[in-house]
Length: 425
Image (cartoon, rainbow, N blue to C red):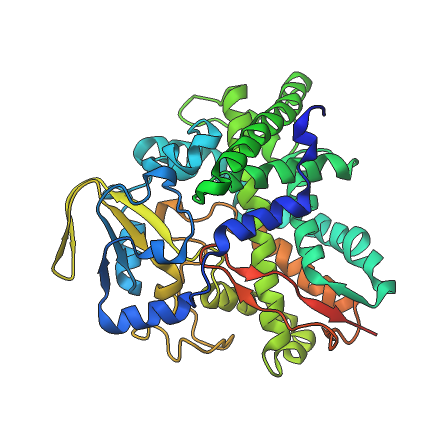
């Protein structure tokens, strides 16, 4: 590695993304609750008041925009990818990935690429990784923490998705400085979607350096792996061998897709872990219940994703005229689906403002919904489940650190806890 890209540090890159997507101090839950009470649809750029970017990049605010808040409305938009499309993302966030990003694909192109990528991320594939993930979690990540008897769990939360996901991608895990640099570059790319004019130029410069650094690093791996025969059950190996309708991906496509998967594969898992642990440690009686009954871990994760989704909204573009609640939405408009609101819709969830792992299970939108549902959700759940179990097994009498402030979940777009300070015996 040479040149200025080496100056991108993992911790500072993560902090920069958090700051970019944190937004104003408005309570997004309270604002959405009030809006649901007033009207299920908002005519205008509802997101603007929070001061955070959307996937539309510089197109944000340039065309008619509407926001939806109710569960059924959000579901109907996310389910109907023909009417409510995602191609505009190629010119926003997707511009940093040469437009070749699955989030920005529609129709048949999206279906084909999803079919190529999906097998590597389905439960039957992911469950094969559970034992090695658990070993890494206990032996290399949580085990070395034990003697300290105190920690900020967000340090673990930043480390483990990178350590594990990059191994699952097919990158060498022998040199932590390399995969941490890859992760820092992936975060810098996300941070390039900056709307603050005072920070925009520098954020885009860093993103440009990161795009090239990450591309070159993955290219080296992909070319070597193809020469060696593309064996292995990891993501790069599967992408090199994948066939769909008689077609395989070329090196550029494998490199670019692998690169576009990396930010979501790590950064969002970090935030979800932070929220899960914050809720586990601050909800009275819950820690002891989960400690003694680990079958509750999946319910804990699902309720955390409902209660505090990492991504608070999804944006779509109308490919044709649409209508909600008597309001006509012209073709070419942006529709902001307020996931954070739909997940607390009083018409769907009993006592929605309560964090309750015993509530009747029903789909929420923390991992999206429909054709663009998060492809890596099963990996994230396995990783976080292994992390929770390792922490509870290896850190006896885990509890919040009384000498540090309690965790706070915040963020107008990417939500999570910045710190989860704990002690143990």
